Image (cartoon, rainbow, N blue to C red; front, side, top):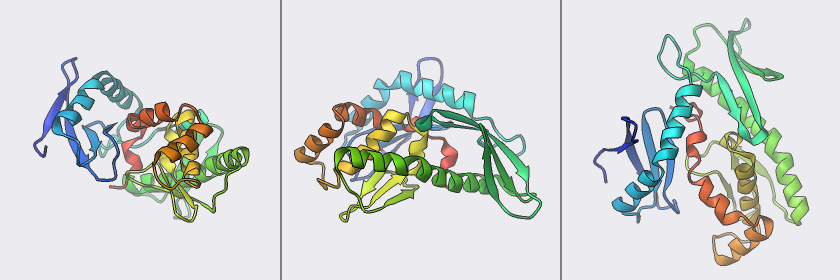
Length: 247
């Protein structure tokens, strides 16, 4: 499985496939970047199973690749992707991103209506701009998800200790044994029903700490579409811009 292979997209294009295995993964998931298809898979998954998932989602991969090409312009100097728009589906928002030079040598992000402005000193590298924007989005994620989580907890009579916003590479969220919930700020890029599903999923873990049948019974009591949404969550990583990951 270490040998590189390519997925034929049926329109003359082919995309390099890279498999990332981890014992924590429960099923095969896909993420499309401009250069490759990243496939997350459990260690026990066979090569045939991994390839079958990729091939079954060929149309979805092709569409995701087209979306990336249409929405991620490249910096004219460095040839690297620099975010120009923020498609924050969780709040049904599409914000334009502008870049300006700060006069006081500080980095900051401001938003007015649907325009986000990132300010940084002259000659600031692109990676630094992205880092400033990531940090700002983490604060936005708290602003968005904290009241949602509180509302869900109150509605269903559940309790959690605290909320943390993280930039996990392999998880959308987690719940500690003490009832503290961590959410991935990249949930902002997911459709609202999937972002809300993750919040409910982690709240269910305040009752059942594992993924036993009892956990799923609790979760189904919170959202009857739990299994369906869980499957959708495994195939939506192509919605997450590559720049949101540190390099």
